[in-house]
Image (cartoon, rainbow, N blue to C red; front, side, top):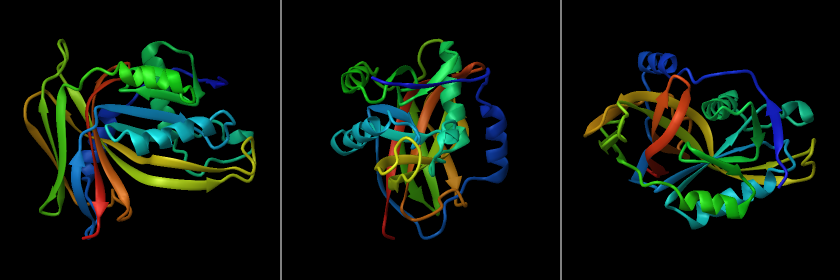
Length: 260
């Protein structure tokens, strides 16, 4: 299975600084957006992909299949921007996605990142287009120790978290994600010229909104500009972190929009 590699300098996830900025700003959801009940997946699959990577379309297709056939897996597309110089500027890429992938690599002690890379629950990484490796990694996913539910009340989104932290851990970060359920992109330049690629659960925004130390706690998010349109999905991750970067995901939930 072909992988596209790139080298990177040392980096770390500046969650604390980002959290301060988010709390100062206040996350809110645009008025007029209603949501269906949330679901709680058993595992999270993050695919780092690129429209400019010829090895990525099979991985994108596999992730689409996972999203359709395995609702107990939260399948996320995180397009990266470091292949844009190859001739096609990825229309969905975010530098924050590239930084998140580099932070995972730094946590493992890796000196490079590659596409397509799929990370399961923030821990195990495999080539995203290798079906056997992907399914095996998902089969090894440990049970979540945090239960998460999402709901909307009083013009705000509530993320209710309960459960426990793994032994030796004191805090976990609560992340909120805005997702595009599906995006089909025609590629007219670069390695995938002439292709039209479908991406599912594309991460458009990912922000830290609080810290959790175990037990029942509610994170209330007042309405804001965070949700850009009525078709966006909302998801929450509960993830361990330390000074070297992100770690294991121990809980998750996702909520779909519905007509008010």
